Length: 217
Image (spheres, rainbow, N blue to C red):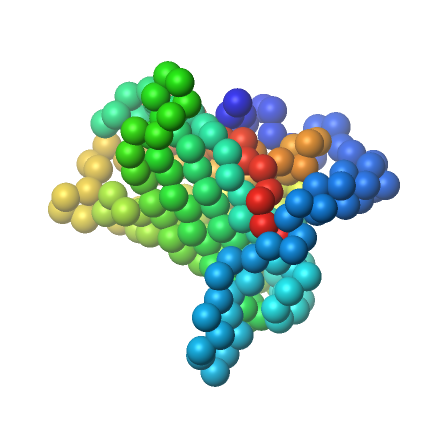
């Protein structure tokens, strides 16, 4: 089930105790800690890793984003101007190679009423950076012909809020996509929830949201 912005973690939401969070992470890691994204190892530089136990150390400048590193899969809901309302499956990868940025990639596929895939949907790829003042820079390229720059800050150690500052659309891209806001957060179950809101008729409305389980890392 996908999340509304109010259900995602923020400064005022209930938090897991430190020991509960560690215990939950250790239990879930029994199935994910040994897995990683494929790497050919043929370049003279480190492969990307989505597993903090493997590969180069995470750059010190990215510690505020450390909980995101991994591969996440699950389902969500969309309500777009072009395609209307539909359910989708999703995989998100947050990986690094030891440098001061995170490589981001996600793929979506549409689901029918029985939860079966009916074909590929959107894709996004980009990079996340964070400066010494904890301001996040998120550069995202959409398969639909959109390039966006988001800026934001950590809300706490388990949630991150971003707002689009620049949106460029190609001639064949979606003319109806307005500026927006994204919220990513770890839920009490240690799953990743996220919401993308867009400006429609002068107000922000949820466009896409999902709840994802860690499968690598």
